[in-house]
Length: 142
Image 1 (cartoon, rainbow, N blue to C red):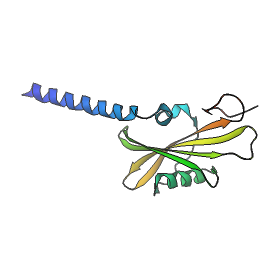
Image 2 (cartoon, one colour):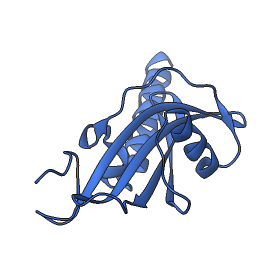
Image 3 (cartoon, rainbow, N blue to C red):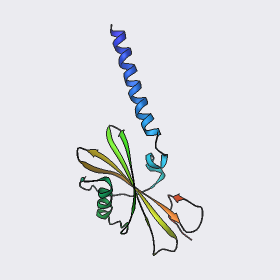
Image 4 (cartoon, helix red, strand yellow):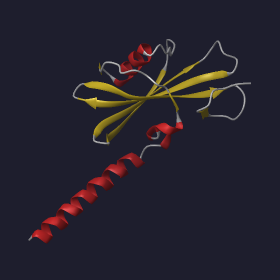
């Protein structure tokens, strides 16, 4: 009887881990891998209630980061990661006053608890006027 119980428990744990990994595989690495982004250090900020997009703008404002009047958003509900319900919000905006940078993209990783979002990580990418196309981790310089 113990062997059946242990085997059942093993199968349950294996399936649980496989489902968690499978859920995260549906997202691009740019969503799930914070190492692809320039890390922005910050002191702890208060949790935020509201929609993820609203919380992202509030958090960026608290960090003295401006995203203009009409930023674009993408929200990814990752699911459980490291025991916490996780959401990633991308906030992008065009830069008008810089000859090197076309746009900036921020990645905010939130842990969700009840009706509040807690900021876990912030990253940044650049889209440059010159050089290779696409988003990059390193600042644009000529």
